[in-house]
Length: 186
Image (cartoon, rainbow, N blue to C red; front, side, top):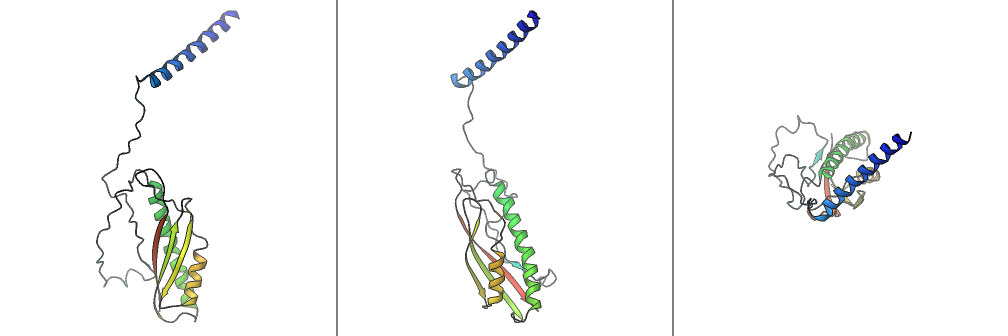
């Protein structure tokens, strides 16, 4: 019995000594600590365009005649993708949220007499806060339509929680943004 206790004591003592050596090596300068350098990937395939694209209720068949004349938007160099993976994934969530609700609002516009036939462009100005919550700054509709503004206001009361962008200094910042939504009533 005494031999087992002696072996157990010797093992625990040697384990404590090895931990002490590791700590001394780290703080004594023999091991180098992580310098905190962040390497920015030059691969831009993981970037999501910071400007939100125009979402339309038109089907792809109706868009065949139109050509895309917008140039390639380069991401902000001060927002490395290694720090913003969560931001980019949440932007995809935002795009899916807008596309889904655009379909619903378009169906509601077709069912009501409050919206005349035509194309309506709604611009939503919002801000992504430091906690990821969206704050709506303004909603404009061209041509003006109170029903659509009311529907978008209701939509913006329940947005998904996004992630604020983290810049190269490692700090998140508030991001003002705009989203254009196109509703077509036939």
